[in-house]
Length: 180
Image (tube, rainbow, N blue to C red):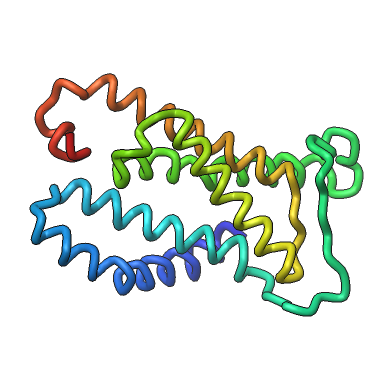
């Protein structure tokens, strides 16, 4: 799955992102937006497209599925690992966390108003809830554990951003890059 994602998903996401981001790039040049911030915004667009590809398009979409899967019991994977196996469970948990780490790092750079831990956490929560709702209605499973793990990933990403910001906040190149 990872190889297919790198071979198909990443190039498609990058190409779609060029098309989507071009108007914002041209508008940002008018307002003298720093190149590093453009890079962060483009990377955020690529990551968003990649997340949409992975969570909604891989495996197909069915607007009239035979059944819908919904799990609203948090941490059910602790007691039901036998159904998917321990290795698959760990892979699911880690991939759900890692998928949102880049968003947690890039969103505060792209959107300065989201440079607080709680705002970023609410943003990550909102994005993942929206994804799970769409998954439920397109024949995929919707799982509260995915919401929890994605939000944790966004929080970890923000922690990485905050650490780097703390380390380099006095550097002129960093302040220019993040638009301070």
